Length: 477
Image 1 (spheres, rainbow, N blue to C red):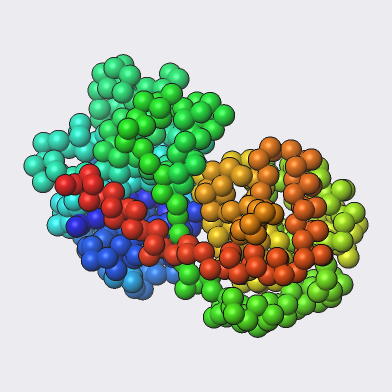
Image 2 (cartoon, helix red, strand yellow; image 1 turned 180 degrees about the horizontal axis):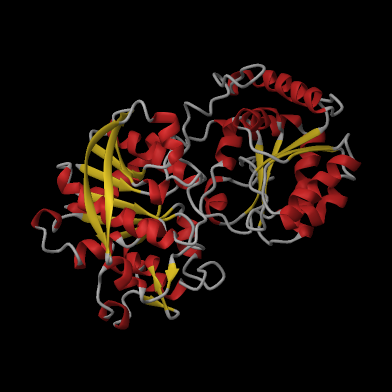
């Protein structure tokens, strides 16, 4: 099939989070299955700086954004057998970062219109057009209502993936005409209206041929008021075309047997060499070099979504135990300051690095015994899968993708790939940590068995992409 992905970001060109990882990995995995795959991204200045000498200028045209006529440059780069098309407009996309501007609605309205206009011009009209999050959520609506007169577009099937339902694209109703040149009847009929706003995500729920989320549990959770962020009743209405597909990880990049950032490579058959990475990290950070101390790793954005309000509240209890904590991340100032305070006052127990460093992150995965990820909600999550691949057992709040990927330790049959707690509370976080600590201190055979089970889980994109392959066939045949 001919498959096209349209998204606001994609690795290795521009990435701020999990969406970028998916767009970087899923298309190239689908190419291996024999599909002809293209990706459409905005041409940000960060892409110009890194890849400007490699991209090919194809052509330019103008597209209408409401009453505005805006320049559209189209560039291309074939990367790992995937054709990446870039929509170039310096006014909209050369701003130093991907998101966070007052006119984001205009920027991504332009991007969506330009992407649709571009398809026929580059002679790539896909069988399936797969769009992601609110930035591209109007495309299924536009194809069926604004561009229905283009015969070549009439057979396109659309898939919309919710990576995070918190960001829905809620804007003033008047922007429907101002940006998309569409009549208010579509808003007044209720198709695009939600809570007295034009809601781009609602538009995708109504108009896409299929809707996915990034884990089966999250697909169920967003149908509830607790996790639906106000859209739960709309999600329930389209449950007949909703499914959850777990993301994968790039097992070539995240491989302890070949990772260039590690002091010593190791594998499930040579786990004893993992200890050398632990000792090296302890020494580097000025922590006591002790193999018998449980080393807890944290690599994360420091937000309440990720559960770090809970962790800070529990820190006084946690540091009473024989543990060390190594944290890498940035986020809310109160969390950065809180972990920095513990690092300064308990330097033998806590190391907090308030930044992001990919090489250092992978060293933490490789060195840590336990990986802490107590998210309040988690659509999918990648860190827990990476941690397991490096033999670091995740301790998670059993929610969303964490519930779908981490099997909590079962005392009776020895199964498990980590530890989990169901009630989001300090008590159960600490209680679960105590359980893990007891096994680490008193039953190393079981700990080793859990590591082996974690490291042999298959989280590759080659496996994960099969579910999308099946879905594309389902909606086109």
